[in-house]
Length: 442
Ligand code: PMP
Image (cartoon, rainbow, N blue to C red; front, side, top):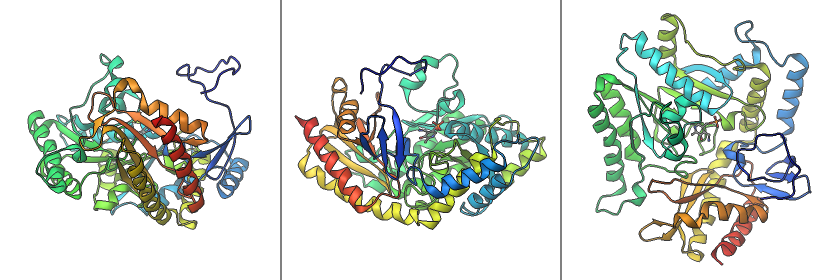
């Protein structure tokens, strides 16, 4: 936190003020006073290839010289075409239609609206309910917020929102019963089946989930059994599976899409964050070609945003994906993720208030608890999620935290550096984090 900053006309969301950003390079950011921070959360899991990547900046400069904007209803553009081809080439078979937007919420909105229009095109206008999970985060626009399971964020908007029916996220690690993890995974997946039956299967349009959770659950991963069962249930009832890979996509978990870890094939995917990697506001919906075709045949997709698919954002996105391949960052995410996870796990010996470490690749989190054996959360009044982040910030390490109030998950901290993070920088993260945990414990 920083005091003494000049008054500003910017509408800051709260009274919390941070120092001014001066510049960034690689995994580091500097404020205007010259203090250096290791970006241990890649912003909000955005800056996957690090800051000020020269190849991306050069590609953006080249595109700026040519054109920065052409309205999508007036012109096609080459960067958008090329980026769509590149993304489609890495998607599961058949997911070959890419619709560009400018961020994660827009990507999720697009998925929901496409699913609805597909039902209408199929003569199933009675299908409109989208089932989602609690806790979850899918975005801040009213549609995406309606499927979001974070009551603090949606409560004020209750009269304006259509809240989706929600099933619990698979917090299998918190259950203390005689079942194996895989059995628990099945039990959580089958809650989807029960919810579909309760809602009336003929009214259910889609199920949306984050394959590896993000901010809402702190890198929650389900047992393998969960994913196969979810797909089978969607197929049984003819329900579309929407995977929100806004945070988990673009290689962050050590696969292009996190769903690949389980060979899970979504019908529609939402992407953003790591695809623009902080260089451009960019997001995308990727849809099964049959879904896109049916909607186009039925009069077209009634949706769009002015800045969608603009050449500058797409040129940046294309250069980002080229850098991910050139530097082999998906492999790096897996390898460095394993190294960082092992180091985080090792700190559990020293700090009994770390309940667990979880996640895949470089989408990692740890949770602070009152007691590890029961995973009982710390008291809300302690504000651990804010305190530890502030201590780390002062030490020059940025991490991302949340507390999911009302749920079973307590204070969790995402440790998600850019995928370019080196061994030495992992050492630096751990030194700063350990020192911060020590001060937190005092
Ligand atoms: N879905 C997920 C899984 C996210 O993590 C986020 C952002 N944290 C969003 C959607 C919304 O993205 P945006 O903030 O770019 O609108």
